[in-house]
Each structure stands twice: as structure tokens, then as C-alpha cells.
Amino acid sequence: MSFIKDESFLLSNDYARELYFNYAEKQPIIDYHCHLPPDQIAGDKVFENLTQIWIYGDHYKWRAMRTLGIDEKYITGNGTDEEKFRAWAETVPYTLRNPLYHWTHLELKRYFGIETLLSEKTADEIYRQANEKLNTTAYSCRGLLTKMNVEVVCTTEDPTDSLEHHQKLAGSDYPVKVTTSFRPDKAIMITNEGFNDYVEKLGEAAGMAIGNYNDLLEVLKKRIQYFHDNGSRVSDHGLEQIYSEDYTEAEVKAVFEKKRNGKTITREEALKFQSAVLYFLAETYCEFGWVQQFHLGALRNNNSRMNRLLGPDTGWDSIGDFTQSVALSRFLNKLDSKNKLAKTILYNLNPADNEVMASMIGNFNDGSVKGKVQFGSGWWFLDQKDGMTKQMNALSNMGLISCFVGMLTDSRSFLSFPRHEYFRRLVCNLFGEEIENGELPADMEWIGKIVSDICYNNAKDYFGF
Image 1 (cartoon, rainbow, N blue to C red):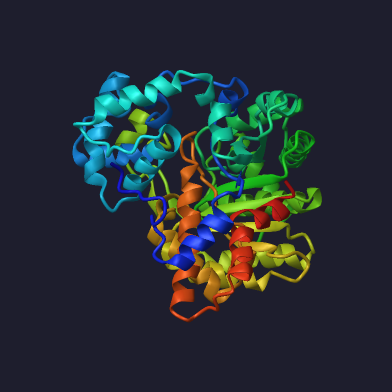
Image 2: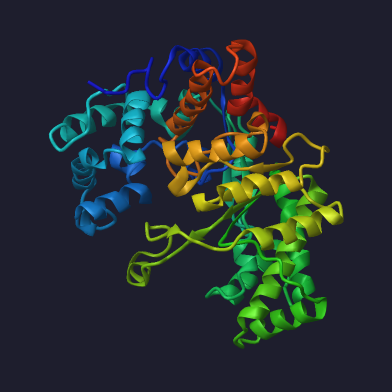
């Protein structure tokens, strides 16, 4: 039987349990940033087996399997789905104290009612039980979202995307709101391989040739308008750090022209260009009344050999130790000084920067909007018990956790929504322990309201969903 006891899992006392079961558990889920494929939601895909929905694309699992010595054939290679599942099952008992151990058994229990611990010995029976349910319409992509009480899903799309799948969903009677966030990093990162080809593709999406820097900005704004017309109210950026170099318009125009002519640009030129485009986008988000998100600090594609073989987002990324505070302050201050700072969520990947982010947001919360600038939940390597608790402690100590917009999955998996439960239990335990220790009053109605706000209400108000 499962070690996950509903009444006590991550809840260390009666106060924590009361907060969770009375105020957190039944709140709908607003997943305001994820990477679910919208075509699968629009087509209401039914997965053939547990491997396809659970292991395909999950680089968290892949890293663990590689560490255990599992051959790549059974991870991303040409092994059968059943062989890949058995390889994962063999790995799970060795993931003790990694969040994968908790997530794996929460997902089996919440979606399939399976309480047996997954291992090499139990793999075949669990695979059979889960597959029997997956092959029914109740376990289609839409059915799974409904099953988890999901109210809003915000996927992530490139500016060149047609948004045809979101349009199909908007015209359907499906009760879950599926919207998108605008992710224009490829238009910013001028040193990336393929930048010029991407500019051509971006122009085609907007129906306009991009001949110069001003054309690029015009096209980006047209695509923001297109996303806005299709219901988007959120942008997202995945950057090592914020760019905020000084530049002149003439310099940036010259850099763009140089790149378009196939010439090599310097690091200084790239930083000026990246800063200029990022400022333009941020000002435009404010104009449209959007929320902007910045995921900062990932050191990507570290293993060049495996990146050549498998490509990006296959498990070769890690935490970076980039300097964040000075550039971030300059960026936010420049926008604020022009009254063009949109609602902003900052996520850091390096826990050493928790207090930097928690204190930085207070510089630009000007009273115009509740929690205008947010320190986002622990993400990627930090969306686990220790990482999320440290993020919430830093936010509590230097800001107002009561204004926090809470959890997101940042996931590509339709089975990842129990991570919201995981987060909610941690929130309730944080408050419950301090009530028991006499550090907070046992005012369950008021603290329960704060918990409900963190789990649901704050995000609903902040994003306007």
C-alpha cells in the first residue's frame, strides 16, 4: 500500500490538516504557466499507454534513469514503450528523497487509484491497471484536466504560432479555459544559431517582410496584438539573466543589419540588441495590460555531445550562477520611471538568489496593484519541498506571502497536476507548524483565507481569469 496517507502526508499537525482540508484541497487549479501541447488538448488525445503520457518528454525522469545507469535506448531511444516503463519502474525505488518519488506515487494514486509502490516487481501489474483506464474517454487529455479540477491552463507558444488549437478550444463548450503565453526569446537572442531564419519565419507569420530593425519591432507588436485578440494576457521569457545595457537606436539598428548580412557580432553588440528588444517588449506588454514573466538563471545545454544527439530540453540543463540584481534593478527601474512597468513575476533558478528576488520586488510594488511585482514559486530544480519552502520563507521574511500568486506546474505532462496538491500541503504545513509553535495565532478563519488566496484567489485576481 502507498506510504502517502491523505490525512497526514506533508501535514505535521492538526492545524496544518485543518487548513489543507478546509481551505486548500478543493480550490480549483489555475495553472498559469505550463508547456502542455495545445494540439493534444484540442484533439482530446487519448494516450495508448502509461509510457506515452508519463515518460515521453519528461526530462526529470530521464536524468534519474541516466544516473542509475539505464541505457539511452530505454529512455529516449528505440526501446518499446513497455521496456521504457519497466526501466522507469526499476529506477523509482532509487529516487528516495528526490521529489520524483513523491510525485510518482501521488500521480498513480490521484489519477489511477493505484496505491502500490512502483518497482521492478510491480511494474507489469501497474502498467496494466493504468493502461486499462487510459484507454477510456474519461482519461483523454480534456478528461484528465477536468478530473483534477483545473479551471485555467496557460500554455506557452512562440510568436510565430498560428494559435489554431487555442481558437478551436475557444469555440468549443469545453469548460476549462485554455489560453497561452507569448514566448519571444528567439527574436531576442541574436547570437543563436538560426536567428536569421527565424526572422524570416516571424515575418511570414505576420504577413510582412522584415527588412530592418524597425520592421522587427513592428512585427513583434503585430504578433502581440494577434495573441491578445486570441485571448492571451501573459508573456514569458526564459533567460540566463535580464538584459539592461545602455544603447542608442542607431547602434541597435546597425547590429541588426550586421547580423542580417551574415557578419559576426560581438558580445557587447549582442547585449545592446537584446536589451533594446527586451525593453520594447516589456513596454508593449504594459500597453496591452499583460502580465510579464521572467524565468531566470538556467544554464542550458551543458553537454554538447548529447545536445547534438538529442537536441535541447532533453535533460542536460542545470542551475546557473549568473549575477542578477544590478541588471534586474536597472531594467525594472527604467520601465517604472516611464510608468511602463507591467505586472511582473520573477522566477529564479538559483536558491542563492532567493533573498535578492524577494527584496527586489518590494522596490517596485508601488501600491497601484496588489502584489504587482511577484517573486514566483520555486521552479524546475526548485519545485520540491526544500526549494518551495525556502522560496516561501524568503518571500514571507521580506514581503507579503499573503499576496503570493502561488503554484504552477511548468510541465509538459498531463499527469503533473498533483504538484499543486504537493504545494498546497507545504503551504498549509508552513502555517500549521507556526501556529503550533505559538508564532501565529490560531485564527483558522483568517489564516484559512490567506491559504485560499495563495492557492487560488490571488492568481484569479492577478491574471484576470
